[in-house]
Length: 349
Image 1 (spheres, helix red, strand yellow):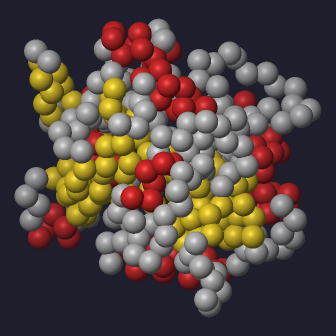
Image 2 (cartoon, one colour; image 1 turned 30 degrees about the vertical axis):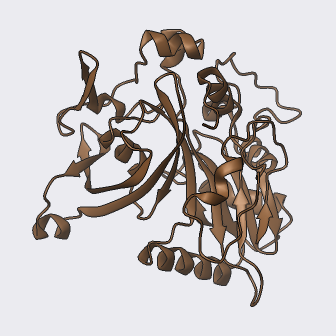
């Protein structure tokens, strides 16, 4: 199996040492002590020559999209390229960048023509094959060949139907799951509430519910490390639904750190956590307790800016030619994510 790693890596290898042992794909040999889980040295958000200056941030490496023009965003994305081979281009996307959006908005999709030119692809315009969500960091897979893109999309669809994971995320959760590993199943629907699209779990869905858009969702999880009331968790979605992993971890009473949309659905009374009604619980900023703030060395106002600690770390792909070995694409963690692991003492148990 060919392993493709991002170019800049650091010393946080807690997940790399155990990567090959959890739900290993049949016929794929594990890579011992894979260095892919390291510290991203920082997305170059201010390429040379930029005259715009950003305000000091408690979380270095975050993308301030409002301060970027199209040309600067192309420079950011070009600096985030993990690998370019044949028609495939892989990026390590910074959090905060939407893949798509409304006409006129600055998104990954909106600058693909310029990025294609910048990477020397000429008239072969890139298209998105696989990508993490707006607030999620990590891998984005692009292709300049429509046939290759179609083949890979069919591969992902077939793998989901066979319940064979192809994407691996890592997350830091506020709280520790009750079991060290397992699966999370939930029926979910998308509702427009007060001008915002929110994902709502549906208990005991009927046939009519499914006809109206309710979907069954499934994720696998594995707790890698625990410390300071938090956990480092590996997640493998086996279905595709907006915010699936965030909502699944809320259902485990362990919201993802930096989830300022769904974490409010977890309440606490006398140290016991419980779920609040999703339909009537409005999104609000996540408020870590004082002990967690001290461990993270954050003020309450800084915690309100805490980025989502959910990172698409690994993608498994088939060989691009007959007889070619499968590929494993890896992207290192953002610097703020690695800092959190260090602050919380989340090391391999």
